[in-house]
Amino acid sequence: MRKITKVIACMLIPVFLLSSLGATQAQATIQGPSTHAQSAALIDVTSGRILYSKDGDKELRIASLTKIMTAIVAIEHSKLDDKVKVSPTAFAKEGSSLYLKLGEEMTLENMLYGLMLRSGNDAASAIAEHVGGSEEGFVLLMNKKAEQIGLTHSHFMNPHGLDAEGHYSTANDLARLTAYALHNPVFKRIVATEDKSAPNPNESWEYSWHNKNKMLRMYEGADGVKTGYTKKAFRCLVSSATRNGQQLAAVTLNDGNDWNDHARMLDFGFEYFPLVEVAKQEQPVQNTDVVTGRGFWYPLAKSEEGSLTKKLILHENRGQSETEGKEQSKDPSFGLAGRIDMQLDGKLVGSIPVYRKGSYIPPEPKTEDATLGGIGDVSSWATAWRAVLSHLLSP
Image (cartoon, rainbow, N blue to C red; front, top):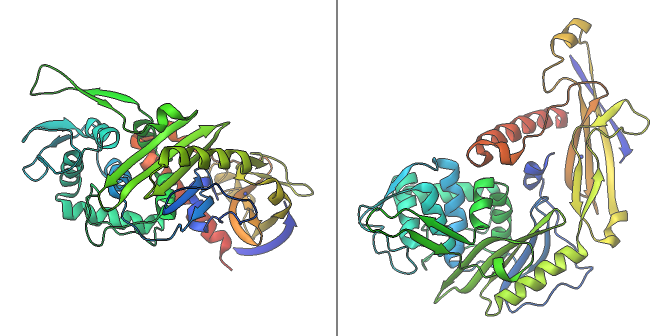
């Protein structure tokens, strides 16, 4: 079989693969919001595009924002109904606490609620020991995940965020981590919860946790994420909100006026960088016999819409018999004709596959229907697409 590449200037990699393409950062053509933060960032969750950044790559202490990584690693590596036991190491951990008893057992799911709503350091240690075998083993998983996501200015030394040398991240990295985590429906559900109760095996009363994140009550559409504070990191906050189908996440490090600053940052993103539908799913591509396999949305300022260029790249396979075609008609890769690359100011921001008209187009998985936060289904789906796209991109 011989593959021939034909590039046509025209007018889409699924959203989960955008990070691997290096989503572009918004240009400084629009005056960003003022903040009191030492470092700040604002990201569009769907695309992974950073819309605003203030010293976004400055490596700083991040306090309990660490628990965003703790939660997503735990969700991806364990089962929600696992029983997590409180060890002597986790018991009476300094700082914020759920006041768990030594030897107490709680489901991982409930412990994750306590971790994210009340910032329990005892829960963080207990989760780490359960998932990683020890805190040290879990920290290895945290740093491996950071590398996988592409967090180039982050390093973790513990699962709770208590001040430690060598434990740091940046506003930009935390924005990317949060966008990744919010694609997981289990994580997304937990951080959007205002109040949660859980069984208490040692008392007649239940645990009752009220989310420390005031943005959930202060800002219309708020749906996450995490507060943080230590004497060295000062006030840290990651918040998220969804309006008109668009979800944004804001990050501030060392910000004494974070609630108001986050409201301004989120307002800025929704006003100036709305999601624009660039292409619809199964949309015919003009003057060809192919249709789009996915829709494509991207946050664009009005002044940028004319800067988005589209290129159709077709791959024609020769030497395949008619019989082979019939046998492979249900193969997800059969009928795949190429892709459409999307570029903004010359930088690749995404791609979508195109298929021959009438061929089988594999459905995109819905994260809310995937098992255990969509990790198994979405990961295998994303891996398959990487393989397909790697084949298409090869010379």
